[in-house]
Amino acid sequence: MAVLSVRRYGDPVLRRRARPVDEVTPEVERLVDDMIDTMYDEVGIGLAAPQVGASLRLMVVADEDGRGAQALVNPVIVEQGGSVTAEEGCLSLPGIFAPVTRAEWVRLEARDLTGRPVSLRARHLRARVFQHEIDHLDGVLFIDRVDAVTRDRIKRRIKKQGFAADAAAHRAFAL
Image 1 (spheres, one colour):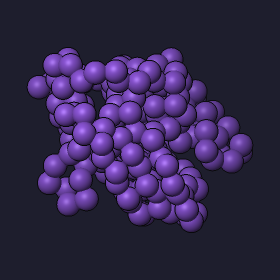
Image 2 (image 1 turned 30 degrees about the vertical axis):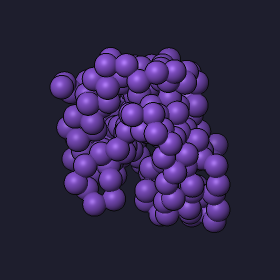
Image 3 (image 1 turned 90 degrees about the vertical axis):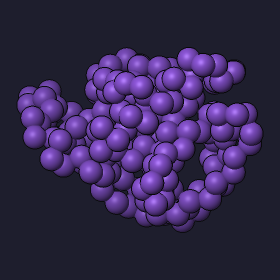
């Protein structure tokens, strides 16, 4: 297992719609292991394959108890409701945080690494993680979900200053 390099804002892979995983091969299993190592090394709570340069509909999320991680293959949100706004960050935009409005709860369907169907309900932070990571699979970044003024301010800051060298100190809630 290895820690992979997290792609940053500006990398074209982050803006592409990822392709479905047709088969869980040993390479996909190895990628999942590496993604989990990377997520924990980056102190993240979720990571989508495009964030490590693999344009696949695959994501890993920390479990609710913080004791492990779960891989979700070809995830889709099939139900959602409510609305909540909270500060959000992203491992691909280190040190950048902004308020994002998302569904308060979701029901997600996917497959696990053995091909079995998985259906998960989530509320609050876990629902936010699912939505954020599925956005990555669609080529959408959290800054696309903020108001135009905030998005322009963030883009100007990145262009002028790049990413903060001390971003690591603030990434505990980055997804």
